[in-house]
Each structure stands twice: as structure tokens, then as C-alpha cells.
Image (tube, rainbow, N blue to C red; front, side):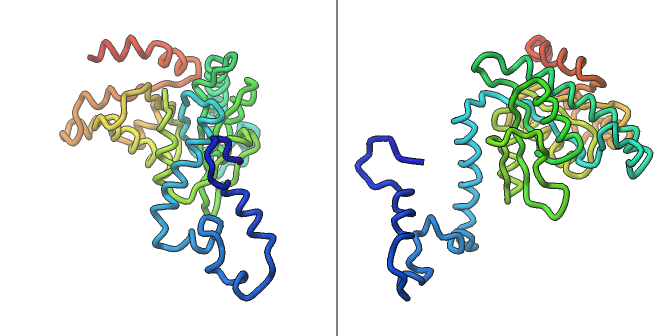
Length: 276
């Protein structure tokens, strides 16, 4: 990327190219001679962790701004929930039953993409973890509508390679979970949670905590599949024990279908005012 700001200083990319075309000597082969910002070994030192955190904050943020992303719909859900065509291959009967949420996630993403990506505006852009399962369904639904979508992958031993439906220019890869989580929520206009495992629960509770503690503005917070969520989390017990307030139970809304979720989002302004 060239520096077209009109500044008189030499462009960093130009210096990287120039530094490659130099005589091969003991001095130029030494790691000390490398430009600091073009030296992977230096950037990966423990002492540079703060710099790497900043880079993972800045790179996706700047690229999404350049792309024109105005707001996003966050879609969290299990990587192991198969597409309906793979229902018979599911590891458990419960997973086989949950395949319907692949279809609901895909349709929800399609509907929100149709509504948000009109003309040159890029609103309600679907953002997922970029992997398989429900994440794939979300990116796929956006592609069905002819729109763009975001994938926030992270380096893991398994389950994390980009699914083929993420818009290539909006496919990011992370080292730090914290930075990845921040990017999920920075532009969120709604959050949709589908059945999932530890990762989904972690993402759900962090987002709920941010809203509960008013560190984040309230947004439509949708839990797909009331039966699933009430079977894995006893929300009422938390309220009865006093560890959360009864009012906290209104931070989220149960939905079963994509159409129902879209309706909740469209009516959100009225609901927010009525909650006072």
C-alpha cells in the first residue's frame, strides 16, 4: 500500500523492497540488519506482545472500514452441527436433531443480508467465526443473497479453516482470542446465538456480561432453540438464587425460526423503549 497522504517521508513498503536488493554480506545477513517492522522473528518476541495485540486490533478494523462495513449481525453457533445433508453422519442423535438450525442460520443470514446490503450500503453484514457448522451456514446464507460476509478465524489444532462462503477480502485470522472477540462486537447491531459448545457458551456469556454491566449498548440478543438453551442453562435458577436479577432475563429473546428472529430485530426500537 503506497502512502498517498502527501507526506514527504519515504514509504515503508518502498524501503522493504529496496532492502531486498542489497549486496549479500555478513552484515546484511545478520538479523540485526532487518527492518524492525519487516522482521517476523523480532515481532514474535514475548516483549512485543502488546504490539501484536495492537496489530490484531488495527488490521481487521482498518480493512473493514476500507471495505465500507457499517454494522454487523453476529452469528455464534456450534462448529459440529452438520448441514442437513450430513444428518445421518452426526456423532450423536442430539446433533442430528440440531441440523435444522443449520438451515435456520442460513435463512436468517440470507434475510438479513437482503435487508442490509442495498445499494452501496453494507449494514447488517453477517460475521461468523469463519469455520464449519453454524458458522458456515451463516456465511452461506449471505452468499445465497449475493452479499458479503465476514469470517473471523483463529489458529486452532482443529475445526478452524475458512469455510468457502466467507468473502475472501473479509476473511481474517487471529492469534489472540481477546482481539477476535472484540471484533465480533465492535460493529454489532444484533447477536444471534445458535446451539453450540464451549466456544459458543463463552462468546454468549461474554456478550451478555458486557450488556448487563453496560459496557456495551443493548442490541437484539437472540437465542435460537428455547428447548436447547433451557436444557443446558437453568436461567431461572440463577435469578432465584440472586446471582443475576430477574431483569437480566430480558436481555435475550428466544426464537425458533429465521423469520421470527428478523421480526424481533425489526421491532427492537419499540421493545427497547418499552423496557425503559
